[in-house]
Length: 250
Figure 1 (tube, helix red, strand yellow):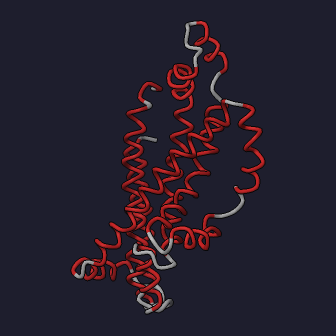
Figure 2 (cartoon, one colour):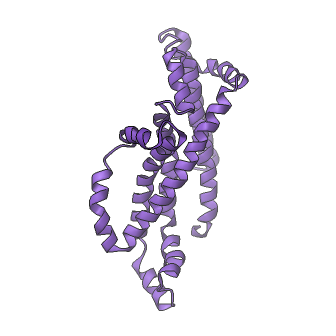
Figure 3 (tube, one colour):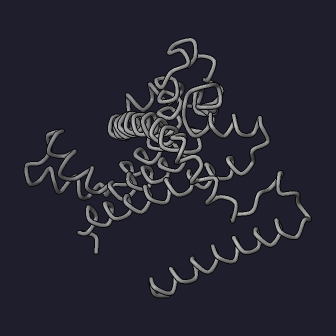
């Protein structure tokens, strides 16, 4: 299937979905106050733009999303790579990983509030925690899967020291897997943004909670679509960067 055909089919799917949603809303089967139609969103968007709410909430969410994403990705890749490279370190941290990994990020909300207060730092911490585990396991698997023959070949050509071996052989070989983890973290980070903001940190999630308390479901839908669009843009840009960095694979 060509890229153009795939794009057309994807667009057709979105149009059918929105049309079905609009038809359900207009049919009266589901009251508009419970599930507003997509046609109600543009007017809501203009209203939120005029009073400055949309810009403020999006910028606030982007602030702690980007900082949490950067911190969690860096630490996850660094620790995952170290665990894959050094068996002793891997054994040392394996028990800690098994103990902490099953705990969801939202379970850390009380500690985030105690440690950082109701602040952007709390949200960044929770987002970083979510993204960390995704990138940790992606980097660990990718580095572990690097062809050992390449490493031996590097030794033969004088690239046996840690730094040249890491940056000239291991990381280039592991990049596809690492990029897969980074891409997954982009989406999971947005999911955590909403959860992190539910306890009063300014952002998209807080605005959605305020609106739901007033049964202003059209505002809730607007910010749900906002999250989807922001993720779509970030994913599109990431794929473009990934295709350039991994151009050597073609």
